Length: 121
Image (cartoon, rainbow, N blue to C red):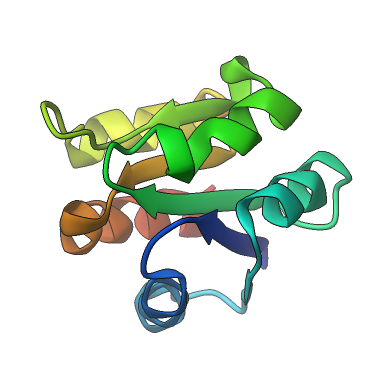
């Protein structure tokens, strides 16, 4: 199933978008926007999913998405003190989360799990 994903957050947006395109086995659209524009795009239904990175995994990565989409649709998959494993991330996707925040230094660990979960949704 094809899906549309937007990269927001504060750090490494272009690199994250490139990595998502490389990881996905689906025909997906991946675009980069400011955190506000990205969150609004998901809220308005222009994109299916949002990912973002910052130093905490919640602030600059996810604050706008949480405010606009709702905390029930967002999840921090990696913070300085905790990182969800692949099964936990896929479970969050299957439970309706559409916005994912993480710390920039965990990108290589969490993106494969996020993309796998979205590709198989």
